[in-house]
Length: 253
Ligand SMILES: NC(=O)c1ccc[n+]([C@@H]2O[C@H](COP(=O)([O-])OP(=O)(O)OC[C@H]3O[C@@H](n4cnc5c(N)ncnc54)[C@H](OP(=O)(O)O)[C@@H]3O)[C@@H](O)[C@H]2O)c1
Image (cartoon, rainbow, N blue to C red):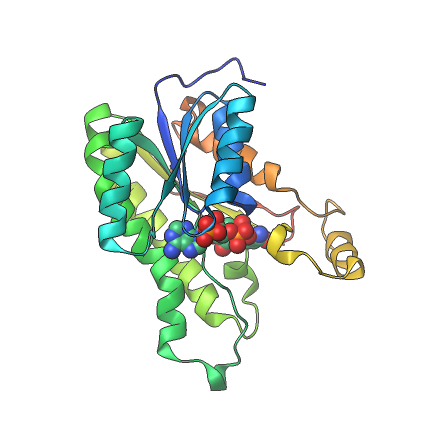
């Protein structure tokens, strides 16, 4: 169902939108009237299903293959989106690779680099390519998908935690630098929101996590999509450099 406040003619690019939170974010953005470029890396059928679902709900979407950690891949991606849909002025940095737990003794520098590729390198490559469009429109929304792990400091996860902390750093710095052009930069920090890759997690584990939250339940991918859709809209125009936790209140104390 399309919402009243439509963002006609605006193009949003969501990285890693073939499944998981990215797919839900893409669908919610399309609900608000944005035309959505659904980026995927390997899962073409997943991305096509997301596009189909959006079109079925009378939204606008197209799928675009690209490795967002690769400089040439990002260049080709932004060129293709601009050509086929128009210049993107909403960018959601969501894509992630594998997130293994590794004890300190077994960590290698490349484990950190692998996470930094997704949460620092890819957002930088992408923002550099879309900035000219945002500046000339006098409007831009950059929404980075972070994580509550920065507050929680999960054990055996410092490579991922450090890269998500770096993502918060660029969010704040870019907000200061780009505000003068009407571009806001914010970070949405989800808690544990089960998606396909969590299939097989024992129900008892899910129940225990949900029961430990102030809101007493697990979150849903659409709830992350709602927060992103608000930050992508005109209505969020005086909010920048902020981290918004979507985690049932887990990090409130
Ligand atoms: N789910 C959670 O509980 C949770 C909690 C906190 C934060 N987050 C954050 O939320 C974001 C989404 O997580 P998720 O759980 O939804 O992940 P997911 O279900 O594993 O999906 C990952 C997405 O990233 C894409 N991707 C992988 N490598 C890529 C590359 N090189 N270039 C472009 N796209 C690539 C995948 O595309 P293909 O499948 O097409 O290859 C897929 O669409 C991540 O930033 C994650 O850190 C998630």
